[in-house]
Length: 354
Image 1 (cartoon, rainbow, N blue to C red):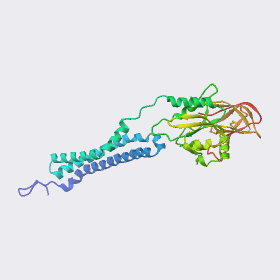
Image 2: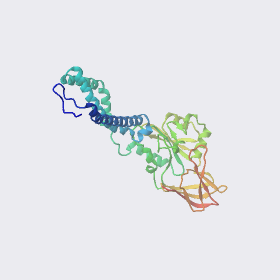
Image 3: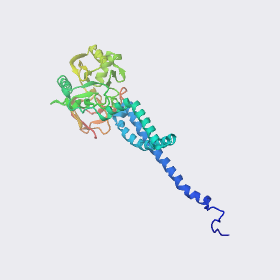
Image 4: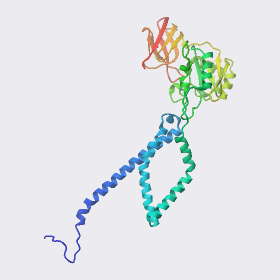
């Protein structure tokens, strides 16, 4: 009925069947936690590494800074790598029959890997440890380019700028052109220069690397170029690609005005056409900045004035009797600005919510 301990012929054996589950439970929980941690580190490594590689392959993602996620990817991979190294060292010790032999085998294997991957590691070191120097200022070439634009253009029409692919990490300085070309008459208006990659829908009608509004410039007929430049009130064109230089040199309405230089030769063309931001009705461009647009001598046609300006929500006009509406344009994904005006107005000021 009662247990008094083992006899002389019996060895002490505790009731293992009753205690084993309690001793195995912590080990099971420990393995479960290790699996969860391994999945977390592995998922973090894959996500960050995938975004970093996508940033290298895709310019829009690279501009968002995803290439910098390589550092957290390596940090997440450090713990699994250490665990794998420890397991590899333990396996080498068992296979070679001793810790010293195992250490020598592991060291030899690592030396072989380092020898094979030396060129890749050298390129990686050059990319991350030796970055390109920060460029300060415009430099003589770009200063001369800005001066040519300031001398040969006015505020009455836009400058069509042919964008070029920007190397990874390079600063798109052309976004400063409206400010750099400002004088007592005001800043110049540019079509292009803001987003060379064309990642926003406002740039779909722009001029990028021989492609004007999504078509090769060589395929544009003279009358199509005329309608395009009238539609967007283009008075000057800056060309860089050989195809663009050839096409505008062959157009009777374009006259080569100046030779430009910015990491390669280019040219400024002046278009022989009247300048006006009004596509329907009449309006004279007075001045503009990031807060307002001032128009003078506004004369409606059938009570409306259509402007070669992109509409944005929150636009309003002064005086209050002038109403701002959307004008759907079949060739542009962004609507234009339509003013509903009961009669001629001496001055109209457009403002918007920032």
